[in-house]
Amino acid sequence: MKANVKPVEMLYEASQTTLGLIEGAVPKHEMQILKSFFRCMESNLRIKLEQIAEGKPIIGHHFAFPSEVFSCFDAVPICVEAISYLFSALFTTGSEKYYDLANSWGHPYHSCTSQKGMIGMALEHNFIDFDVIAIPSAPCDNTIASYQFFSEHLNIPTIVADMPYYHNSRGYEYYSNELESMIQELSTILNQEPNYERLRQSIIYSNHAVENLAEINNLRRSIPCPVESVFNPIGSAVQNFFSGQVEKEIFYNEVLEIARERVRTKKAWRETDERVRSFWPYMSVFFDITFCEWLDRKLGMPIVTDIFNYFFFGPIKNIESLDTKGMIDGLAYQSMEYPMVRQSESFASVFFEDAVNLAHQFSADCAIFTAHIGCKQSASMIQLMREILKEEVGIPMLTIEMDIGDKRMTSLETIKKKVLEFTQTLL
Image 1 (cartoon, one colour):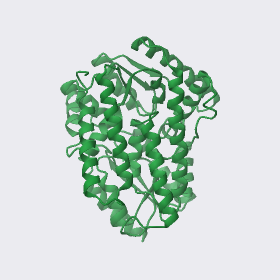
Image 2: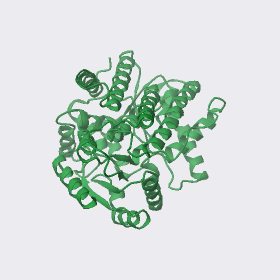
Image 3: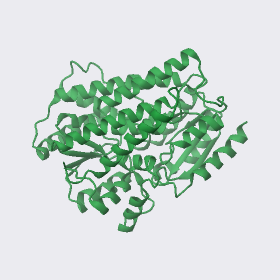
Image 4: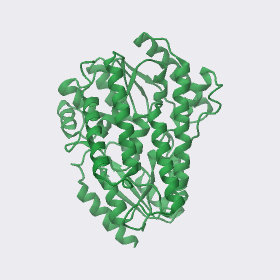
């Protein structure tokens, strides 16, 4: 086995343990979506470890990169940001030790914890042995600045696909060419010829996931919402860690069946009736997924959607007959319209329009904006977002300053207090 894959091994053990606990101790009809996630997570990590044991190279990548591309090669994709935040969610002390190590090394305390966790892991034990890293130049400065650590300090070959500012036909074509160049660079570094039929199969998995998520979101518009709030943080992990892999299709298919059944039977799945439908224009809380259970069961305040769990694009059409260029063109478009990239890498008006659209679609009663310390680009527009949602949709917005991956900046107790006080003004 590769010498340094400790984070993957730790997550695999944590997934096994958590899955055993919730399947053994939680009634069959409870936490069905969380159980589905951990079944897929356990399977995905087990396969990754088996592949690494066979000597396959490891490709580290950014969450906003279309990792279907990596299926061209006999390699193991690992999402850097997903590792950091899965640690935050699954372990008692989260990734805090590694954040502190990165800070001590000189990485700014106010930078994004999404990459900082892996930086700390590398500083302590050279925790994971990437053969190559592939990232886009979007959606924020944190991305480029943090990945320089891996490139310059650890000397890991790092390929950057330049993403243009304008999201139009010219921009999509430019980024498609960047992805083509990246595939050729990966081919040279890995000493493998790209297999585009494997890419086609990977896109087919993703297409099914995109179609299922669209139907899930249609069902989430129902009142009461048939999907637990925990779908939001774990859905973010699914997008980033399972991209282009069969587990992504399986997870969304299982969630879709659960949601269909609940809408059909109108069977309650929580003790508290739905009282307030909350829309989160940015991200949900990653460092403690029990917070979502508290929203659902104690407040009757489901998160009907957030930035990561709604796609403003459809599946890549005619995938069975597309040539290589057509497949990469489709991935380039999806990548540039990917959650957070679409809203943060282009004009602010896109973010506002999307927020108004989603608040209307999901019949939101309020909005809650997580002002993540690493996301300077989003913090600059909070007041405008508040005014626009009030004027266009007629709903108030609560802002909570926090680090979505580090509970020490704003504790869970403080977040609950703010949400509870906000809720009391609505009822």
